[in-house]
Image (cartoon, rainbow, N blue to C red; front, side):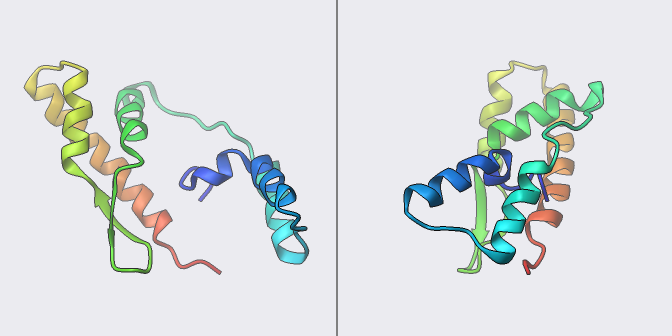
Length: 117
């Protein structure tokens, strides 16, 4: 679940934020913060997937949610199409990228919608 949540990309900011509020993390929360800080920030992306990942990351704030429980349904398709248009790709390449982004989206949803402990 490392890449799916924005806060885990900068685990030290969580510590700084709670410290600024006068909060001390203890027990399990402190252990989770330490574990997040120890996780590597790098992972391999195959060259043929790089463009699709870049598009996905540009759209990753455009999630559609269901209900009040924070369950993500999908990325806003219009947001993906808008970002794709910025690349000025031929229509057949746009469709290929859209398919790739939606595959990434499915993987991300399966992680982000897992029940939390």
